[in-house]
Image 1 (cartoon, rainbow, N blue to C red):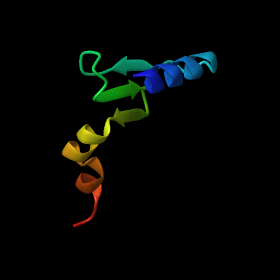
Image 2: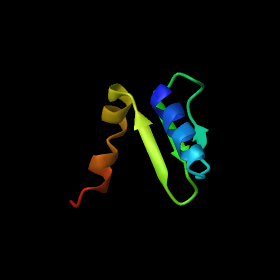
Image 3: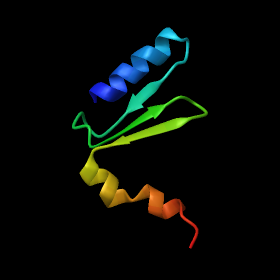
Length: 59
C-alpha cells in the first residue's frame, strides 16, 4: 500500500489525478486508476495466483 500511496501522491503533485482501489486495506492487489492507464500492484502470492502475464501471452 505504501508504494501505491507514494505513487499517487507524486502523480498528484504533477497534476495527474489517481484513484486507489484495493482489497480492504490488506494490499494484496491494489489498482491505481489514472483514467486512461491502470496500474496493478500485487504482492508476490497474488501475482502468482492471477498470472496476468500468462493471460496475455500468445498461445
